[in-house]
Length: 276
Image (cartoon, rainbow, N blue to C red; front, top):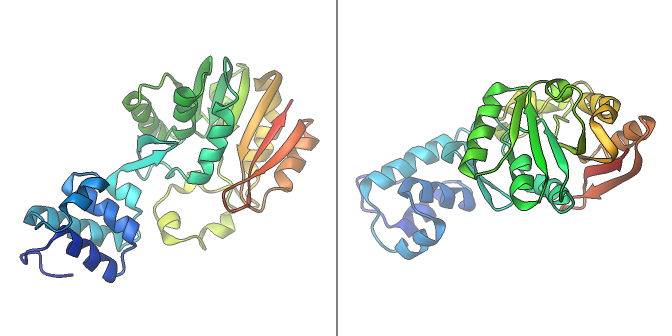
């Protein structure tokens, strides 16, 4: 990169970052964050000289990104279903694939009570509360640090959600819900080391690790969800791309009906729906 004392236009700063190996979309987000502007404003500024302090901040952000720290953790922001969320290393970064799971719920939850297990950043619960018409939304997580982030996101977006701390169904005791949705940890422990460093080294291990075969939490949910679903209650679960047979089998053995596997944008198995 050029010396920060040298005058630099916004366009040249972006081009230099990309030429130095930074992904262009990442560089744009970091440049906007450094300048406290939106992406459209960068285009308007493209041929203007950047303030020196903005360029210095941009260089510092690029240095962080070079350590494989995800852009979302650097900026502290992520977007999910068009909703702006705060994220940090206590929560998973919301994925576009998970939006499909949330959409399936909020399109079909009118007047329903919804429980979101393993809520993390609160992305699913908040999307359901804001974009669906549920009677009530409850969200649980074992991590109090994650819940702090989820509560802040709900407050930021004026989403009415009850947050509870506990391991899966532990916090809801004998309560019943019309819909249970979850994106639980589903990566086999032995596979985590092979993940890209942005995930392996920075996203919370507790939110990734699904035990030896990745199915630990699905076994628990399949076994216990019946006690927490109302008559004709429905279950919505995100799964790994290689779990399109194993998770439905667990649900079938537990007595669930109308089990369906849905695919993501890449045509991979990504979530399962079922009914009691």
